[in-house]
Image (cartoon, rainbow, N blue to C red):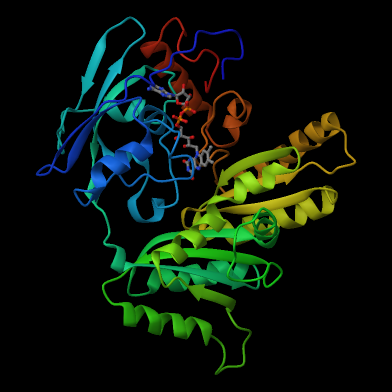
Length: 390
Ligand SMILES: Cc1cc2nc3c(=O)[nH]c(=O)nc-3n(C[C@H](O)[C@H](O)[C@H](O)COP(=O)(O)OP(=O)(O)OC[C@H]3O[C@@H](n4cnc5c(N)ncnc54)[C@H](O)[C@@H]3O)c2cc1C
């Protein structure tokens, strides 16, 4: 955002996508290339750049790198920074840095390339990158399921079971019942009725052995029958075709826009260690219920990465200004909880201007001193994204 009349730089015309190096499994792209265009350019070679999220049709590689974007398959592939070999960066004084080239290994000291990834354009302008590619999983190896669960504790129990199962977990995403209601209200088909459970999971796995996976699924649906304990999964479905897979995925992908469609929404994007997710979620739920009973709270996110998105919708009767004041108060409560659980006040949406005041909840004073020192070394006049992040 250019909040103070800054000059805005667009790289949208720097969108060249080079040839794939099939031996090294890399591709060279200019920073303005659209994420989805890179996916399209690599898929015929049976390869992909495995950074994937709902905004891939508009986001640029430079933006993905500058925000170290996450997405729906972080649990399988990790963050953007794992998928970059080389960077070309233009510094504020016009100097061009070519960092790491096409080297997989380069142990010549501190890796400057990684400083620019996630720096939100505060240190230099990324002009070009050599991206690492990986094999595109064969369609027949992918299984996608949708589960309705009793509550958030059951979601985490299912996650533990899936982690120990004999397949590769590619995504484990969750949404609350309120989110499902909104998505369905906006025309997305759901295999289960809203109201079936308190929470739902979209799970994608890669497996060589479909029958072993189906046996595991059977065990999950039969959970507790022998011991008489409550079931883990209340209802669910396994996609039987690519079309059904994309229908299930569209439930998860349409949450944010569906919730935002009918009223003003305040958003938070937080992370805590997975071991603390259940306690964190329970604190969030009880504190909102006690202090902000008028708020409609929507929770969804990348459970497998310990990352929750919390959206609060403005009550119809509340004035916009009151809503902002109350949300600012409730943010402090959330940030305190992040500190309590050693979490992050920004899991994947960066810092920018909005999260800058909240940084001390996640970063120590000593860290902030070093971050400011880095900024003034790379951009001494503070001209790049002025006032952002640090
Ligand atoms: C519907 C939706 C879903 C999303 N889901 C996810 C998700 O699941 N996971 C996730 O991590 N993120 C998600 N995001 C956010 C996503 O990471 C960012 O939108 C995307 O990675 C940023 O790319 P962009 O081209 O839009 O960058 P912009 O928004 O244009 O810029 C982002 C930042 O990067 C800087 N920047 C941009 N280009 C360069 C460059 N060439 N050199 C230096 N700095 C640069 C900008 O100055 C700015 O600070 C989502 C966003 C939307 C809208």
